Amino acid sequence: MPARKLYFESIRVGDELPALAKAPVDRVQLSRYAGASGDYNPVHVDELYAKSVGMPSVYAPGMLVMGMLGQLISDWARGGQLRRYNVRFIKMVWPGDTVVCKGRVSDRHGSGGRYFVEIDLWAENQKGELVMKGGSQIQLFFSLEDENRQRSGQSPIVVEVPRESLVVPAPATASSEAASSAPTAPEEEDEGTDEGRTGASSKKTAPREKPAAKTASLPVAKKAKK
Image 1 (tube, rainbow, N blue to C red):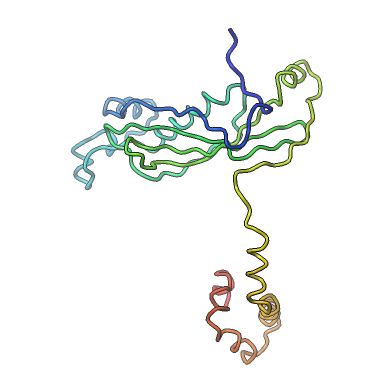
Image 2: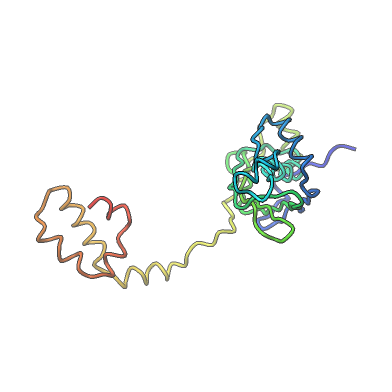
């Protein structure tokens, strides 16, 4: 029986990836990973050394947990192409910890016969604490028919798919209220910028710095510029 393949047409934003629970991390696994990766940092394999530098014991390399999250993606996206994969290390993983890898489809879009899905990824320990988070982008065939066409040298099926995302944009009313609460702010920022370029006297800029609210609303970059 052929391996299951994943196609763009069957994916929806918000779909959860099947959770991947790994066996508890042990010191044998850490030693094997050191040999396989060439990372012989003693804080991962030498208990006495780890304690001498203030650690309660050896701990797992971050790349080991990253590999576990990578397995989650590779098991799920059969037939897809990994275009991007990035993570951020949040918390250390210790011997005895059980890592559970999870993911969710956060975005999908397609144009010109190319179809992509974005995946939010994260890993938790047995206490439910976040130890790693990240994301990836997968490129997929639109359907089995699309795959067969492309593999036979024909042009891909072209379906324009507007971007769908879990990220909800801020309501327009909120931005309009913020703008109405300080109607003169855009003019003052423009004038301040012009004055900075033309070298105008400090008489004009001083009054604008008095109101605390306006000063707080200025971007950090402009403050550093002054």
